[in-house]
Length: 194
Image 1 (cartoon, rainbow, N blue to C red):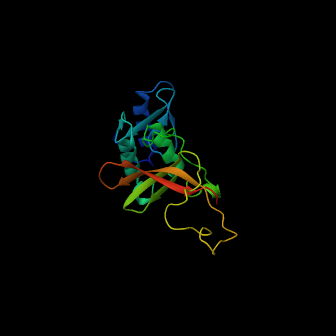
Image 2 (tube, rainbow, N blue to C red):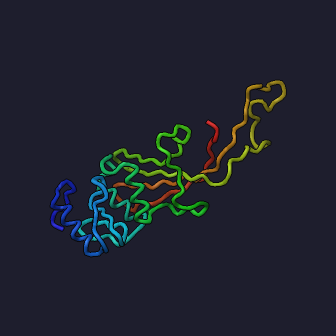
Image 3 (tube, one colour):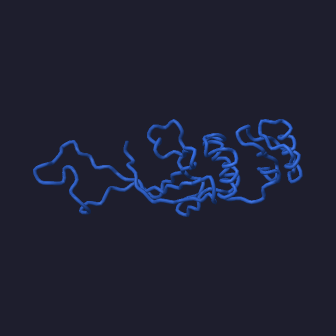
């Protein structure tokens, strides 16, 4: 591939011709935000990156692609397209508690704003954050740690309502200017009553 400029129609034509060599059925452009990523009957997604069909999958492949698109500088795809690439190239985090594609993604839902999938970039690194609900909400256990409001004699707060907590698994794909992108998993709790 001699032209790799995503704004060039000639580059798209060259990439589509390369993708057609491995595709069954017509090859379609997926999105302007995802340069040289195509859909077909089989395989369902074909990525032409750095002038060749990408045969690998996983976080490393997706991270390198997104890095080259300028995601660290805030250029390139937004969260919806990034999620598509993660799914298409089998790069979702290695979670075992729940299905890998069952992360919270509810744009516009104020109750789930802190948990919904997000993309952050600051010029030094970029990260894609996914949150999984693991297990059922539970009441906090009493007797552990200092007394809470309403638990001590003479200081009962009649308006105090204990909050249930939801165990979550937060997965963060860190993409830095160099090195291999990798998932970091953290087990946390969050308030389920907002």
